Amino acid sequence: MKPFFSIIVPTLNEEHFLPLLLSDLERQKEKNFEVIIIDGASADKTEEIAKEFSKKLELSFFQVKKRNVSFQRNLGAQKSNGAFMVFLDADSSVSPYFTKKLHSYILRTKGLVFLPAIAPDEVNSQTKVVFNFTNFIVEMSQSIGRPFSSGGSMIFERNFFHFIGGFPENVFMSEDHQIIQKAYKHGVKARFMRGIKVKMSMRRMKKEGELKLLYKYVLTAAQYLIKGKIDKKIIEYQMGGHFYLQKEKNKSVEDKAQEYLNEAKRFFRKIFLQ
Image (cartoon, rainbow, N blue to C red):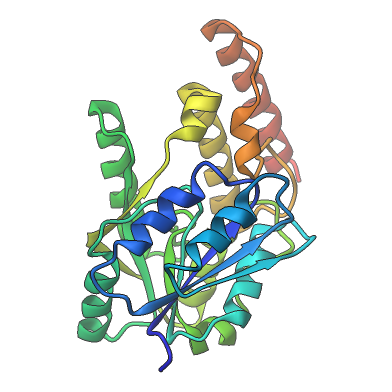
């Protein structure tokens, strides 16, 4: 019997976070899914960990040389068998009722594209406000011509996913926003699910700092809204768990703020003078 969901996870050196996500999937109350991991030739124990969980889950592991999150997701879609494909990042986490709630919601609403709400894995007053606002923007944007996604977490009906051509592989960033935009252009609005959440790791914020990460998100959002895509490298943004093990040089808040301000000025001059 074919699974209802294919949960597709692109990985690169995720030995620390992948087992947390796979443990969440192992604890699901409704085992109506398969797990497909497309790994970008990790140099750590990602493969070993994934294969250990294959004893507990219906899990397939594929390793490729090309390190590209869109390519990896699209390949996972090609390898999948489920009626709906659930795309999750390796550092995300879900409740034990995730697939059960999702299954019930899809059968009830009959949609083609779904976006879960996002929540931080560590809640405080600041992250709560930021994520509430982000969810509000994502939900509201589905009614305009330039909709946003909830990061890398999204669900597609398999035939519609292939019909629109999957994730764009020739962009630097915003592939998640662009595929939601492609669906919108084909007359399909993503259904935002307030009651179904995916938790996101705060590891990038801890690594880069709130100010630097906010600066990056503002620039990429502006580029997306202006051009509809980010096909060139405009910021430093690395994929892979190994990135979070590297140390950065300490700078004062003032130095960082001035550095980001100067970069922002150069960015907007370039955009508006093209």
